Amino acid sequence: MAMSPFFTLLRRDITLALREGGAIGTALGFYLIVIAMLPLGLGPDLNLLSRIAPGLLWIALLLSALLSLGRMFETDHEDGSLELLAIGGTPLELVAAAKALAHWLTTGIPLALLAPLLGILLNLDLSAYGVLVLTMLVGTPAISFLGAIGAALTLRARRGGLLLALLILPLYVPTLIYGIQAISGALLAGQSFWPSFLILAALSLGSLVLGPLAAAAALRIQLQ
Amino acid sequence: MRLTAENLSIRRGNRLVIDGLSFAADSGEVLLLTGPNGAGKTTLLRAIAGFLPLESGNTTLHGGDTEREIGEQSHYVGHANGIKSSLTAAENLEFWCAYLGGSATRTHRRDRVYGALDRLRLAALEDIPAAYLSAGQKRRLGLGRLLVADRPLWLLDEPTVSLDAASVALLAGIVEEHLSGGGLVLAATHIPLGLGSARELRLGGSPAASPGPSDSMIMEETGFNTGLPSVDQSRQGQEK
Image (cartoon, rainbow over all chains, first blue to last red; front, side, top):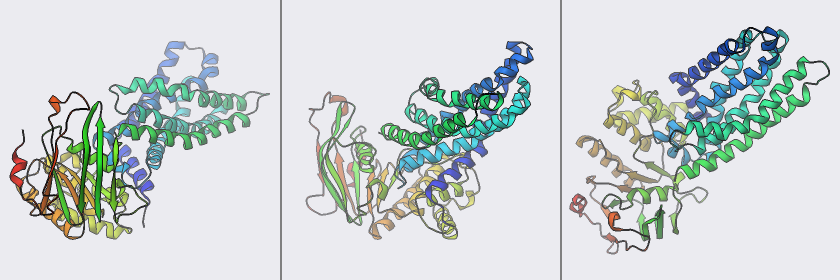
């Protein structure tokens, strides 16, 4: 069966991520370490931990996902693949979208699925587990697709990792706010879950469109 | 099919690397770009592929697909090989074959990939991750792209780097075959490819002594105006 270039590229990137394993392992390991250290720093106040758990889990997830963002285009740029992908006949926007999607599938989803497990360390309210995973699965595409912009912009910058964080973390603020808002909406009486959740979904859908466009524009400059 | 460049100028930083260059190449022809380091060979190839913006002038591929950019009708072989070290040799070529639309069906694709590996004397290494290949083997694997997807224009930037003599002859054979099939090749090279009918486009100028854009650039083209093939391959050896 013939596969479109988009899915060919997506499949290659997922294969590479699974085979090399470093990016996924680092992100998951970092997430685990950060969350495991928080109770040590904050003290054994279970009520406090329980109250701030969703926020901590979200913020740590953003930071963990950032770790592997820098590699999104870097390896392809180093080995010359990026140039060939650019003149392969597939629009650069689709190339960027395929790579961002591969990043979400191999980083965003594993992190979101690990989150409830780490919630145990923070005494996360039992009723929050489902909502937490749901909001993370819906919110994390924005991390990968907005992150693609930063990854493309900092492609040739030496030590671009910190610059990438400075550029991209502010863009994650809306996702963070509405992700937390949706969770507390589901848990607390008198607040509603759906408005925040739908805005969270809208942010992800918007980034699905804008991320690849901006990333492709940045990549064109980087290829010069 | 005919590739023409008219009054091409390309700027890199403050320096006008290519200034007012015109040339043309027809189907079945190979144009060798020669000149000292920094003469703009890579710059010219990258501009034709569409990576670099043109300061002035234009490039046209007559008889090509008008819907697509020249780059999208070209194979570009640059300094890097475009190879993933954790994929096997066969997987690397299969990816490029599928991505570049080399063939529609999976079986046909496999045939092309294994044909190319055979031809490049890499058949015994097909299941080995590319990380374990030598520099020359990686180069050959990178050149395998030329065989697994059909593109009329080949832009080769130092294609013979790290190839042994036998592999250079192999490459020359592949290029000849592409030419006889109506293809077009632009190659920047320091060493003779061993091609009989190569015309030479010499890019000149000494970058060390060119402070500004107003600097005079020497562009001379041999064998072009006469229409006769220039087999003056000894000139390529005059590398500084």
